Image (tube, rainbow, N blue to C red; front, side, top):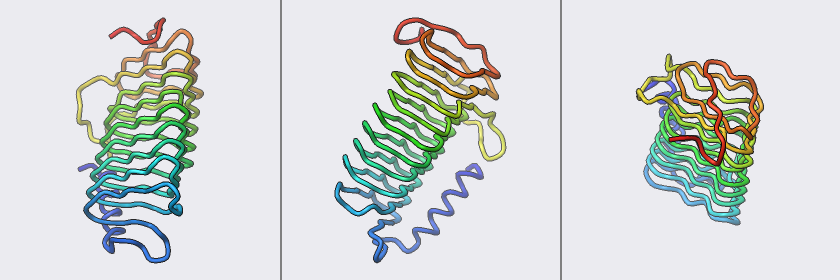
Amino acid sequence: MGKRKLALAVTLTAVLAGCGKMPGTGASARINGSIHVTAGSPAASAATVNGSIVADDDATLTTARTINGGISIGARTSAESLTTVNGAVKLGPGARVSGGITVVNGAITLADGAQVGGAIKNVNGAISLNAAQVSGGITTVDGNVTVSGASRVEGGITVKRPSGAFFHVSDAVPRIVIGPGAVVDGTLRFEHQVVLYVSDSAKIGPVKGATPTPFSGPTPPD
């Protein structure tokens, strides 16, 4: 287990040692089991060790944290930050996260109109944006990244070299696709080998560590 993964797991386990409903807060915390956040409930945190966190359309929550499980927030739902170690994170259409999204092993998917005010970070797993917005940049180690539709990424894209807290788990070369109409404002920085495709109708910042391959049409070649 990498240092970052271990630290997050230890922290969450300590926080959840007294599991259940937190009196006076409406927050939900448990060791085993999933958490369901319904629309109309007071904004509160949700945390579990072994289980998923699901928020309905139009729900509101503060932080959502899990170790083994995914996080899914529905259309127009708002949250402050989302964190998981092993699991995917999905944002529905128009969902908003004011802070960031942090994942170790898992995909991150943003649907149409979803917005993230901070950074998106993972180690392994595809990161996909479809007409979405990220204000704090995208960072991965081994994940594929697809920025499609009228998506906008501020803060650039970084593919980090596996080292220290990040352990290399795949020999696959990450595939980075900046699709038609997408905008990446900031440096695209690659610390190890990637395959980079950039649509001829996309707008990007400076590229360091890779040579872009331009393409026409909706998708790059296979």
